[in-house]
Length: 448
Image (tube, rainbow, N blue to C red):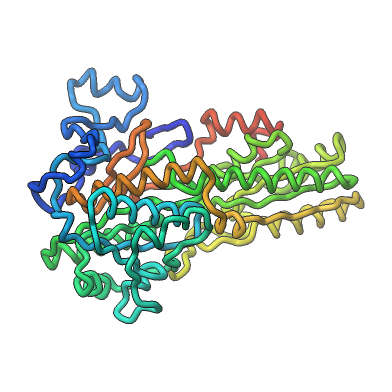
């Protein structure tokens, strides 16, 4: 059964009740210090449905069975840890992404101001900071250190890619007396967090591990949004506007913009929808050919014959088959090796029109690293604040091996194994992609 959202299709079986269960460290017997603040505590009997419309819901209603549902995120009336005795750890992993500093700030502020946690340890440069001999020693974090970091891009703690030995990392957590580790990162980070949980369980240690999903491409399963995505769309739109100006400024001008999206074309699609000047949007989910009557290059030629300028947006994971990439090659960090589709298309456009003796002026723009290093926009900043708060609430309540997500307009708890079991992608038959086709005017299919 496919699960849908307003953004995507998730081609994965609907999870069963066991897959939706969130692991805990034990019974919550400590009264929350948030009670005096009038905090609305989560009603533990409530759940957030995985299905989102009546068609998906009908089989469960007709069979009289309970539909699959997520545990809601939020503050609990009773918690697992005694806040005054807690030492929390924070680590940021993977590539840079707008909002990393917002999340760090939210975690520190919530731990300290809401729960009174006095010791917060920041591990530097990703999981490498948890190795036996880290690049940099961990730093003690306090509200005064993070009060304005949300105004800056990057990560206060630094980041890195690649796995570390789980046994060494748990040794580090024990050495520093960590009770809760808050890990900010994408699917690779979450898999590393799950490996940590397994080693912690083997040692029978009361250490919780909670993930905060960081994937700028917005392709993590069972969350409608991930932080950084909104900023990427906004800034991608600016790059497209520049490409349009360049294209209009030359006879047969072509503005070519490559945006992030290794496995999914959400950024490219939404940035194209936000900018009415895009004529072609190429994404990983929709194959295309270069030549042939319906291919991309003949379609581009017809556009130039008519208007004498064109704007092309391509997601970095699109067209990898044209480069001989099958999707089976991975680097040491577990990331899919990609050829540079942007450079390839630039050169192929020049070759194709050169052989036809048709002059073209191609301007190629790749703003990826600029976008990744920016501060979060207002929508992402707000989202990061909420993610950080709910991650702390989960950690204090003894939840572990889970990630805070956003589904059906609610923040939820998703077990890490479920979160990384499948990847969310753009639905070629869905409203978003069909909207892109209408906005760009490109052919629905560019294959024979």
